[in-house]
Image (tube, rainbow, N blue to C red; front, side, top):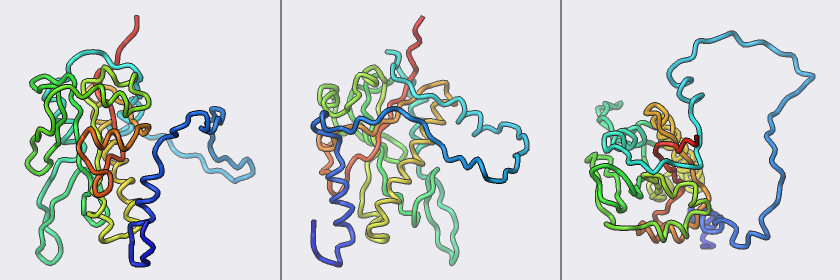
Length: 250
């Protein structure tokens, strides 16, 4: 890490590079499973009124993570709809002073949109197996790599067996300088927040299509970045999500 006081990205880069999953699983903290909420039994309380469930409420309530995907293809139409719900370029919108700006389906600090979506395609109708990049402005797919990719992905994801049958795994990459050149160290937070916005959109859109999802944070950064062709410094994967139909046991 640079010791230059004017280096506004060194600390976040150090954290990013040193937050890979536990290499030695024996050193992983063994905390018991616990779901906690904050509750003050002595606090005065106000009951909330009943409300009718809106579209977002119904989708959010129906959203489920699956650890077993059905080995069935994903329709190209549905795949396109997922990508657009996540991060399609929209606009331009008129801004103050006569300016015009593009936007996406999610908020972004400064309207800078630092993210890129890469698709590990295993079983999508009309697409050859391979790795693709979603060009959000052109609204099409760029071919990154044609052919099998599963063997390297198996080494990258800690829970690969959960998504081995998923028709697609979307990997969200961040081009850090897009946000950090303006916001410095705090820009790293904004990037992670934005990735959460995008992934929630993907999960809700999948639910609307009666599909399932599994959000993935446990992966070897270096292996996954290498698979997609990212250097891990100027651009790196920060989140991933498997999408497709859930397997249903009898």
